[in-house]
Length: 468
Image (cartoon, rainbow, N blue to C red):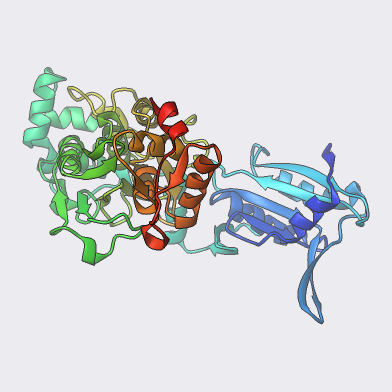
C-alpha cells in the first residue's frame, strides 16, 4: 500500500497539536485498535466526512492534559490500520491517506481524510456509526438505520405507501388537469400505477405531494411552506421582532413552489435598506429565490415532520429545508455534484407546464449566477444537524471602501453606524478600520467637533477630486 510521506515544519507540528476535536476532526494514539479506528471512520463516512490524525496523544501532566506527537516508528507499523479501513467500503475510495513527518519529533503521524460516502459504511463489528459533535454514535435500532438510509439517499420517503384511498390522487383536479395537458391519452389510475405513484391500490407520498389537491391534511407538518417576517438584522429571529403571524402556504408541490416564491417577493418588496444614495427598495434576483425555494421543496427529507421555512429579515432571506444533504453531497461539492433525494418528484414535476425545475441539476448554479449579476454576495450554504440552510444576504460585492465613497458622493458625512448598514459589517471596530484606511490614503478626514459616538467622516479635497 503506497502512501505518500509529507514533510512539515515545526510550526505546523504545533498547529496540529493544538487542534480541537470537532464534528469534522479527531486525533488518536498509534495504540488505537483497527476495530476502534473503523468505528470512527464509519462515523465520518456516514455523516459529513472529516479528518483523523493518528499519532497525536493526550497525556496527563501536572499542568493538565497535554498533546504530544508520538507517531509510528515506520510506515509498516500502520499497515494493520490501513488494511482494515481499505476493506470497509466496497469501492475502497472512501478515504485518502498520507504520513506526516517533521524534524525534532519522533515517528510519523498518519493523516486520514474520510469522505462522506454514498453508501452506508459499517465498522468491522457490523455496526454503522454516525458523528455527532466529537462523538461517534452507533446506529443499532431498525428505525435509526432507516433514518440513516433516508439521510444517505439509499431509500426515499417519497416511496412510502399511505393508508388512504387511491381517489385522493386518481380523481383530483390536479391529476385530471395534468393528464389533459401533458398525457392526453392516459387514464389517471393506469398512468399513476405506471409511474409507481400507486402501490397495492394506495397512493405513495410522492403521489400525494404532486397530485393531491390538498396534501397537507394527509401529510401534516411536512408538506407546507411557512413564511416569517422579522423586522431586524439580528442573527436570530426572536418573537419580539416577528411581524404578524407566520404565513402557511399549502397546496400540491407545483402550486406550493410558485405561491411561496410570489409571497416571498411581495414581502421583500416592502423592505427598504440604506444604500449609497439613501433609502432604497431591497431587490433579490427572482431566479435566486425561485431556484432555492424549488430546491427546498423538491429535495427536502419528507420523513421529517417539519415544514420548509422561509425567514425574511431586513438584510437577508433564510430558507431552511428539513433533512441533511443526501448521499455523498456536501456543502462544498453541492454546486458540481448531483443527487436527487426524491427522484420521482424531481422527474415528474419537470413534466408540468412551465416546470419550476426547468434546468434539472442547475438550480443552485443559476441562483449563484443571478446574485453575481446584481453584484450581490453569493448565497451561504450551511448544513445543520437535521436541516439544510441557505442564506441570501443583501450585501454588495463592492468593497466597504467603495460603498463609503459612493455614499459620500451624495451625502456630506458618514458615521460608523451608517457604514455598517451599507457594508453589512457587524463590528464597530472593523468599520473603523475601513475609515482609517481611507484616511491613510488621504481620501477621508474626521468631521471637526464630532467625537465619541458622534464621530463622522467626510471627504478631503483629494477625496472629492477622486470621487468625481
